Amino acid sequence: MKKTVLTVVCASLMTMSALTPAVADDKPGKKKDDKAKPPANMSTVGGAQLGKAGTQVNLGPGAPVLPKELSGRSWIVADAESGEVLAAHNAHWRLPPASTLKMLFADTVLPTLPKDQVYKVKDSDLADVGAGSSLVGVKEDHTYSVHDLWLGVFLRSGNDAVHVLSKMYGGVPKTVADMNAHAEELQALDTHVVSPDGYDAEGQVSSAYDLTLIARSGLQKADFREYAATATADFPGEGKGKKRETFEIQNTNRLLTGDYGLNPYKGIAGVKNGNTTHAGATFTGVAERDNKVLLVTVMNPDSDEQNAVYQETARLLDWGFKAADKVTPVGELVRPRSAEGSGSSGAAAPEKQKSDGSLKNTEHAAAEQGSSGVGIALAITGGVLLLIGAGVFVVNRRWPLPDLVRKLPRR
Image (cartoon, rainbow, N blue to C red; front, side, top):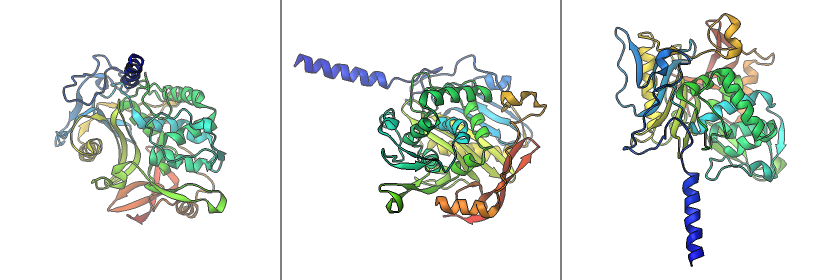
């Protein structure tokens, strides 16, 4: 009996230890009596004002005040094109990022693996997927294309898909090392990667500033935009060959799908949400309205409001679209290190249009992936979805953004 009791106690202690928060500048927590505060000294990457604790905003004449219903531990509103930060709150507070870290995973790995490459999954590929992980349903001894797996990453936040892609990339250790190196290249210096899928791990942190910087980099890639804006798709199930079954998967970004009591946000086009024990709810979203493209990141709201992270993101987007030309920026999204000597602000050079990137081919690709017309949209305006063409245009000759070429009806 004593041995049994001792075993139970030890097991309980081990469980409690596994649930201790990741090492960050403070413990995220979710309790209202949690008095966690941002550190006194935070990074000043992007501007001195961004290193200050609390809300930072420089309102000009006629500018609307910030929404009152904001409980996020950290958040930021930025112009995706110019990189100007319109307002921020504890922008550089290093906190667990949850699955928003998958944006960095995709920005690092996605360009290296051909979409049509196929891979047969082994048991060992899934051995290190964390308990309780979000999964898309990847099965051992089944074959998947890289395209299938990215749909699983972006739509269902599938940690199983992340681990298989990491294996194809060269293994989890290499993936983590390259993600950290890419974060440094982007000057996302608040970010430290331990697990490529964002699963809670000691020492794994990022910030609202970094996640926004990472999203901005990812959105320069056509495939990244396509996956981030896909609402639904067919995913391979059991069976082989032509007899193989498929099942529908839906994006967990509720501002995109309008699920769980929310309406789709007008102009939304991605990018990634997350939720873990230590991180709470996190979200980075991009939206376009009236030729203005904004990025908003919200980390760990402690409000009891249903869908708080999405509601607060929507409020900040609404504010940003109204205030964009009536505030003095509090900072900027910095350029990657490799672009610092280019003599221009913004990101690295635009991606090149593929020679086969016609509208016809774009439409065919969207039809093949079964995305219910959302496929490669980067904007929802006037109650309709707009599909990205393969061509791009350069905003201020710095940042390529998708050319909105045709309309699709909302589901």
